[in-house]
Figure 1: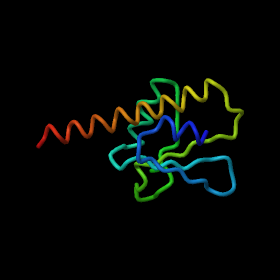
Figure 2: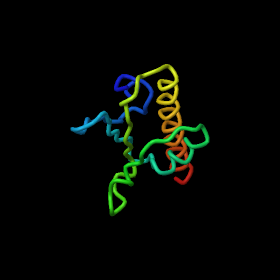
Figure 3: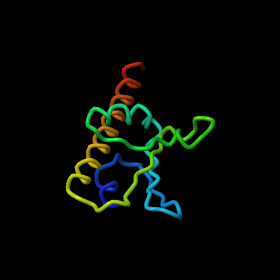
Length: 102
């Protein structure tokens, strides 16, 4: 799962490994809102846990939690690739919008 995240997620993404489970905590570039990302992923029948779920104050919107407790399959790799691709699309959209406003 780690190698998939490194391969498919936008440059600048970071990974940490919380203790006590088979989970990855991924921090995407600040311009990616993982709540919105999760909404887009639902259209592909993919769901992640946006970081904002783990904060009473709404912090960690650029973070998400991935579960890798299951047997890793080609379908799971495709799902991780889709998460990375949609995150990259969102990042490009935000950056293009920012440039257009200048």
